[in-house]
Length: 171
Image (cartoon, rainbow, N blue to C red; front, top):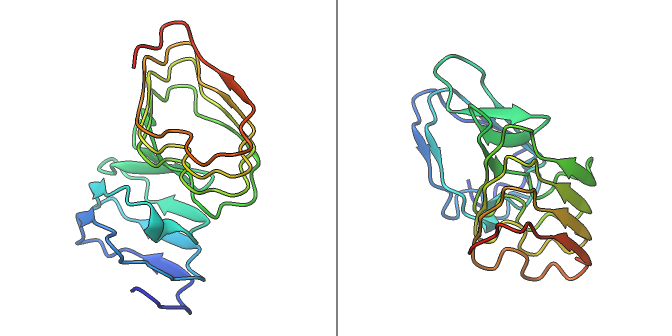
C-alpha cells in the first residue's frame, strides 16, 4: 500500500492475523482510518508507517484483541494503550483510561497536536519511544504507580516543561 496517495480508509480483511507495518503504509498521505477486525491478534508498533492515520476503529466482539476509545487503539481489556494516532488532531489533552497499566512502545510517537497527557494511577510502565517527537507536548503526569520507563521516552519532545515523576520509579 506504500505511496497509495488516494487511500483514505483501510479495512483489514477478516483472515489477517498480524499486521507488520514495515513500510506497508509509508507515505499514504490521505490514510485517515484503519478498521481493525477481531481476527487481528498482533499489530507491530512500527513508528513511521502510521504518520497520517487519524483514528483506529476496532471491531468489538468476544474474540477481539483490540478495542478503540474515540480512535485511540487499546488492547481488548484496555490494559495497554497501543497507539494514539500520529495525526489525531481533534484532541490536545488526553487522559489515559483508568484501568490502563501500560503505555506501549511508540504509543504517542510523533503526534504534533497533543499538549498534555494524564496517565491513570494504574499505569505501571511506559514503553520505549512512547512520546518521541511529540513536538507540542508540554505536560505529562506519569501516574503514581509507574515503575519503569523505556528508552528515549521523551526524546525530541522539545516543548515538554512539566513532568510529574512518581516516587517509585525504578528504571
